[in-house]
Amino acid sequence: MPADEGVRAFRDSSAPRTWPPGGGIDANPMGLVPMNCPMSEPLTADQAIQIVDQTLVNEFELEPSRVHPQARMREDLGLDSLDAVDLIVALEKALRVEIPETIAREMRTVGDVHAYIRRVAGESQ
Image (cartoon, rainbow, N blue to C red; front, side, top):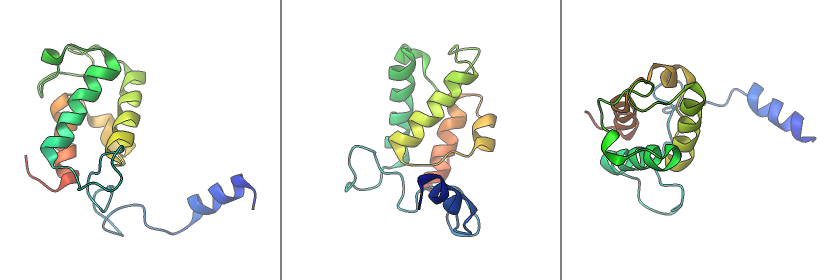
């Protein structure tokens, strides 16, 4: 089967793409697992949030003191819409989690990202 047919077959399949199947949060059913440790224990929400903050610092060359829950992505951190896409892709890879476009569009602050990560990890804020 040519590659494009395989992609089309997957896209058109009725396989669930959310967890739990049929609804819920789009997430890795095994929990948040760091990308560089495939056999490691799932991350806690606090560990995942540290990865979020470190990703912002490293990917966008920000001072760590600027990255806090109240920091606004555009106004305080200077991230534009392309940076926001880059951030989502980096976080999805680092945390092995899917961040739906509808949720990503609503993330205005670092705290919004933290809140979503806590939800995916199954912890309350």
